[in-house]
Length: 333
Image (cartoon, rainbow, N blue to C red; front, side):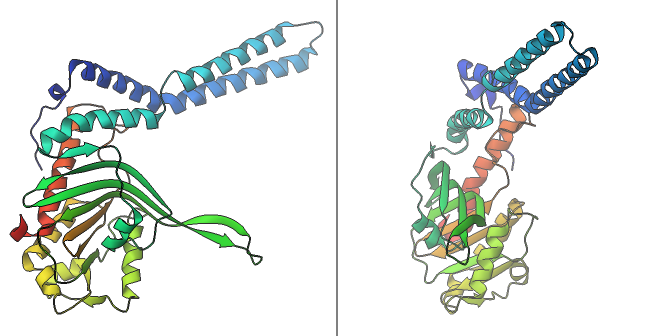
């Protein structure tokens, strides 16, 4: 998806200078672990050598090894303080970077859309989508974008969901909590000017990546296979049925929801992402969940803060509107 740049001129001169400082801080933060290793190694090595000297010499009225040890100790803790307080924490730098970039890129790429750093998405909203198996014990709310996409209004929430269960001993005492289900990525809620005749849920048949990124989709799909009132529905579209598993509250009315154009569009959306995508149609809303391992709208310690990175952020923003248009179908664009 090509998005026209350049993007650096969108920032004010002061913001451009801030981005340059962030790039310098990014470089230092990337090297910070190595600086810790080097300073710790020097401290341990010097102290070890001096300890050996003291043992050999039996420190007979010789104060110089202790003076050196004191000096090295002071230098070591000085370097610790420098590494700790001189540079911002990655989380703080990341938050400032993202707010600055989205404040300039979002209006450019998504005219008419708004951007916020907080929102009120609740567990009830997640439950209505039917895309996450459990009630989350924790919802970490991050960025929120919303705006028009053709005839519909799209809301895109960046969230982290986590469900934990408490393991209990035979005496009923809580031993520890273990994470059962986890999701990090984008949650779409698209408001449509129609009422769908029944509820439909669409899940990927195959996971795309190993590890926990796609676990949420697999866990929810298993839940639906055990459900008695949500029936598996086959569309007859071979390409679609090979890629997705569909459940519906009413099999007779499901074809009116999961139409040929929507099936084609959902395949296109699924091809746009390297991770699992799940969809649901309920009342007058379309819900989408797309997981990520890393935030595509944030900085990366291994990547330069430059036009190429801004271009990728812009493409991700443009894709939000495209996803909203595709999932509603041609008739509602």
